[in-house]
Image 1 (tube, one colour):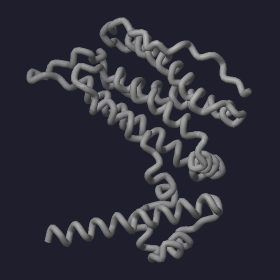
Image 2 (spheres, one colour; image 1 turned 135 degrees about the vertical axis):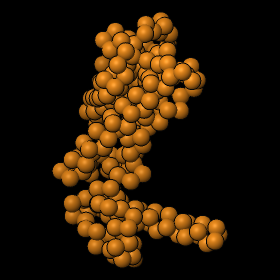
Image 3 (tube, rainbow, N blue to C red; image 1 turned 30 degrees about the horizontal axis):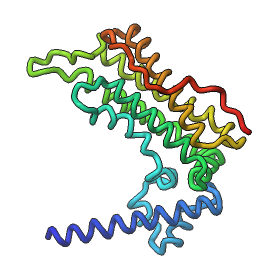
Length: 243
């Protein structure tokens, strides 16, 4: 029974992967709105119902496998090393993710992804929903981290006075700031600035900005005083210009 179950699971994963590849190739060639579920089913040589068995909507099909940023921030908080404050782990993750996304801007896959999203009202609407989902997941993770006490249910040492209020505020502010830093670099990248240069400069800026936000938010929402922030060695980034 176990072997049969494994074969079925592998077959299911294989079919899902095929449907996703065919669909995403079609979205690139024709545009998201021009492709139907029937087109995808025909291209993958499966029934229309098979597509729906794996993906509830066409938007889900487009984003599948492309949005680690939805669960990533929450996962960074939950899997942080012992003794690392939640916001420090979050900052480290976001700085690295900003660098990764800016560095990948030069690839055709990333450029096609962004162009397809920007060209579809449906995808932009779904992307906004995913942004809210990322905030919700991160807020839940921060709440858990700040309310996880010891055996006597004492609050965590690095917890704010009101975790249920502080968590959604921190999630919204941290993720919004990161999105702005990414979006603001796109014109420079389109103008010819090297992705690696943009990534390093923006990572430096992000680290400093999020560090200061951590300190300021701590005073506002009641986080315990933070230890002096170490100097990362990154310089303050100059304005990026093409040329």
